[in-house]
Image 1 (cartoon, helix red, strand yellow):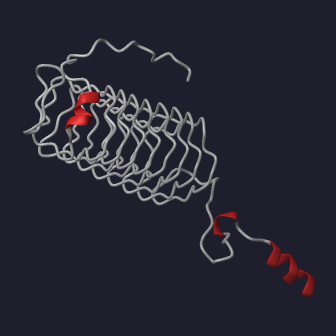
Image 2 (image 1 turned 180 degrees about the horizontal axis):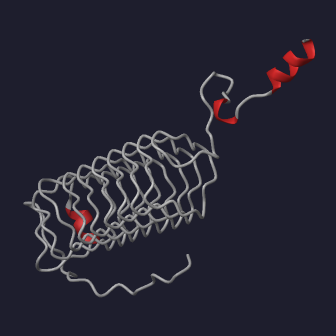
Image 3 (image 1 turned 90 degrees about the horizontal axis):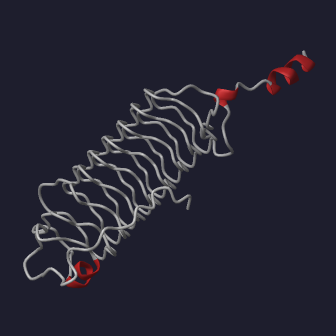
Length: 239
């Protein structure tokens, strides 16, 4: 009996393991499902399109080169995840937490990310074309060369964000946008109606690129160098 008790104590189901605090540990072998816990797991180079991951805990996981197209990740916690060149095209990310993610060259095109947060996120060269980004928080995000063409960014916050060479041409919005202390070096604002934008000052506009169709808030004027020249296409640059 004593030996049997010892052996029984050694058998611990993988899905039920807990850490020192008694919290349930991640199950990296579990299937993609609502509420799953893949926190800290390596899930790179996978094809998990059309998956249901609402309310999942995906914090600090590695999703580099993984394909989530058509999946649902509503209210998922994806904080600090690594997702280099991953695809979230046509994915539902409403109210998801993407704070401090490493998302270089990620495809968010046609995704729904209303109410999501990208605070302090590394999202350079990301594709947000035709995405729904209403009331999305990009505070302090690195958005260099991100493309927002056709995206709905109504009510979004770009406070202290780096939008150097990002493209807002063709983005749509109703109501104000917050650009307080945002870095707008060569940001493409061609045709953009910024008349209701908040936080903009003349120094920011002097760095940006607009044209005769760009509308600015009262008190700001278009710089003499507008319109800017064509930015060289470096989309094939491996860096």
